[in-house]
Length: 473
Image (cartoon, rainbow, N blue to C red; front, side, top):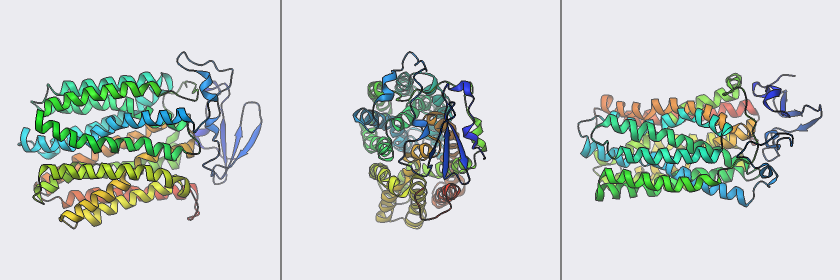
């Protein structure tokens, strides 16, 4: 009998811990408790109650912010959907602000900092996502050891303050990198991790759909934040655009955080981060796939407006409308993937979505400069690019359970940090140095190839779970 690295937890980490021993190809799992009793649990049944969902022993004393009765509340219930709506609103402003940064970058490049290279300005948006991903490790540990409502409230406060402070620092790019980029991302991580992990505890049968609705919040945010930001910039300037966005962000996130309660009691462990994951080959495939996917993910968000203005001769509003189209399509796509995942399997759906997103870049955007094909590329990319984000918690829950999902997501977001640090800055540098500021094709190719590589690693992950091609996984 061989054991998966994830399944060795010290007994003092949880008075009644659940250990999983994998037999053969992980298609049969035996649950062993300290009492010595065991039951068979087919790991390939994604709709079955998972070992990590088992409520904690009644002998465990809840921490001061925990209500033990929450564990007896049914999954897929009304309160679960309240958590989903709250998570959707929180992602609307954390990821929505990141997705709408293209409006700021276009204005900065054309008006405020015309002498600064595109690659320098791209660092603001890059760090919003990359530093958020890196700080996700800390946010995941905080969610296990502190009240998740307090964690997300603190994140909203930091996000709001960072944007207000940035409004007084728009005279130098490095100040905006520090405030609008790094400080904002710290707050966004404290909002993002609870929003992505807590809803999974409240759902079993409709988990994929619930997470699709949650992650659709980032698309909804980008949908209205991009034109709203552009309108505020045109009418009031960047200073008041940042201030208004910061105030609204804090107000919405602070209210939404009240519902971010854990259903399951997760005992604090001595190990802050479980690095035994790095010995699980499935985790490695997922980790490398995320690096590749995120490397290519943000290039269309950051370069499509500049491409439309410089290569197609379109207006600034048309360029920003392309981002709006991507965000609008992503709302449909992320909810749609939540419906497909229970039918096709989480990994199958994630690999397929990433592959189609890459083809929308390489086939529709790369060869053409016509209005129709660029709009079509934006629509198709928006429909499928979100699968890599919305389905990640679903895949993690199916592979490793939901109790430790906060720390696993936080650890995986090291991959997002690496991809973010490689992606948008490299795309901007490619446009500046290889494309001489006017040729976007090398940067477009760069983005599409990395997205395609991500889909390949997700497919390899799929084969490592089950080598049968035409089954749900």
